[in-house]
Length: 321
Image (cartoon, rainbow, N blue to C red; front, side):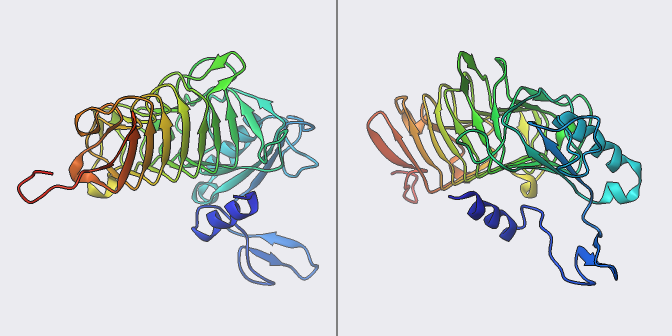
């Protein structure tokens, strides 16, 4: 899928900010002198990893920041300044070929949008490990490639990061001699969305790990997970979901890993329409290749150790196959 098509799909589904309108209307208006006026769309910051400077104000490509960290600081100050910043969504545009940063805070109520390219990839690249030390809610990432800069997890998320979303991004498991443990690991992070992303390379542990605590609103959808050394998607026993409206949904992913493709130990997620390939042998009921609550599953196909089966299996009224 081309980047233009991907951006169109996100806009069409309301997943990505966009600007529309004409003279005197919409988020963009034109005053009597012909100047563009932005209303109600938040602020924009620009990061140019190849030519920016953190002494700039980040207000345009000509005045771009050098680092994403500087843009995040500016964004969070803007959001916290008054009711107008708090109620709108800002945007950070990132061009990097690549940039090396390990972020200790994320931008609140902001979309980080990758533009340009990095080598043969039609998206910028960030090398690093990222974990916030303070609460900044509602961050979304679009069209960015994440690579490891040191061994460990690429993103570590907590309740500080509720509302985090990744759309059309790529996560790399191995970089030269460096192996990431997990692409994304969470503990009590609500409203996490991972959609239309690619996870490639043998992550040392689970690719996506949903850990202890409230994971209400979890959505993992339309992703490709390939070559993981551990489980593909893992939901821990004591992950909790507030109610049926906050239940996790794992839908329409393609997963190929060495062990369990989808491992919902919590038995609480809706698991639907996934296509899974495991290098492991399949045990009774799919254990070893696929684990989920039969009552919450539909139309999952699994291939493991030379056998292909659907999960859940077809049962008669008496419970027999």
